[in-house]
Length: 130
Image 1 (cartoon, rainbow, N blue to C red):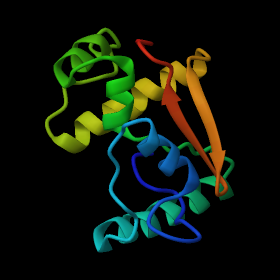
Image 2 (tube, rainbow, N blue to C red):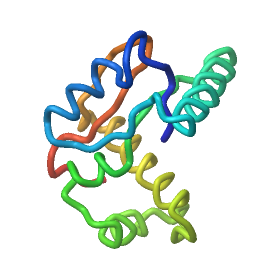
Image 3 (cartoon, rainbow, N blue to C red):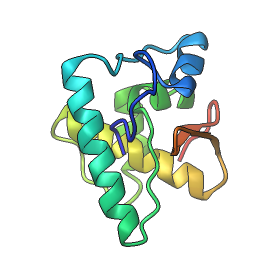
């Protein structure tokens, strides 16, 4: 899911987000009104999906593409080999396609898994390509 699935207990960032920032990635603080609302929606979605047995993972598409070493155009080209993937028509579509790519990499064991605040956050291993 491309949305925060929890809120920080204290401050603007969760522990793993501070780690990503320390690695040089840029993230928006969850104290921004729009991000706080998105976190509320993400938390609700997570609870609803988990209540029916769905495992939910969080990722950050821009960070994921950077780790894969792919531009937006390159990601679309790579993912086009999967017949169920249509070309993205919007930024949200591109981010959803990126989340799908991370999910495929996770199935193949090619992600870093970070557990924090009751959330499982996935990042592709550097230079891994779905």
